[in-house]
Amino acid sequence: MLIEECGRGRRRVAETGIASCFSAIPHDKLMQAVEERVCDQPVLKLLRAMLRAGVMAGGQVRRPDTGAAQGGVISPVMCNVYLHRLDRAWDDGDGVLVRFADGCAPRARLEVAM
Image (cartoon, rainbow, N blue to C red; front, top):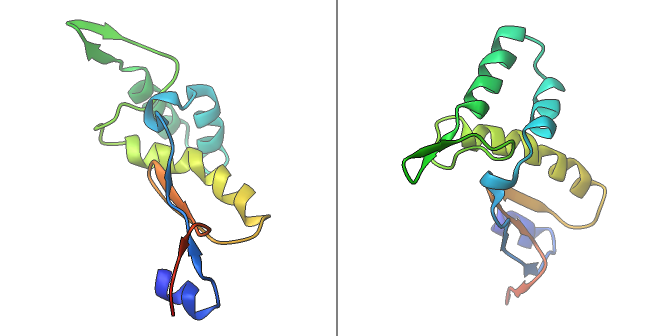
């Protein structure tokens, strides 16, 4: 991707991360994002159950109303579904955004010498 963008005349790269990405996703907004594309009620019910399953911490199960458990099977997919809104918002701006799970690389910082 970087080489392709260099060929298009872009000469800068910035890399960043999204702090607490997996643990900060609000369940209600995440499910709204899922429902934009999925209408199958059994699937939606399963996803809600997976989000509500909770996390074992200090010998106790916590059931927060935010987050997709990091390391969970479905968490990277759910994170990408939620962050797809970021992709759409970025498309209205300048530059190219390459996003992966809980990070992204808006091309704007590192000078590429040619």
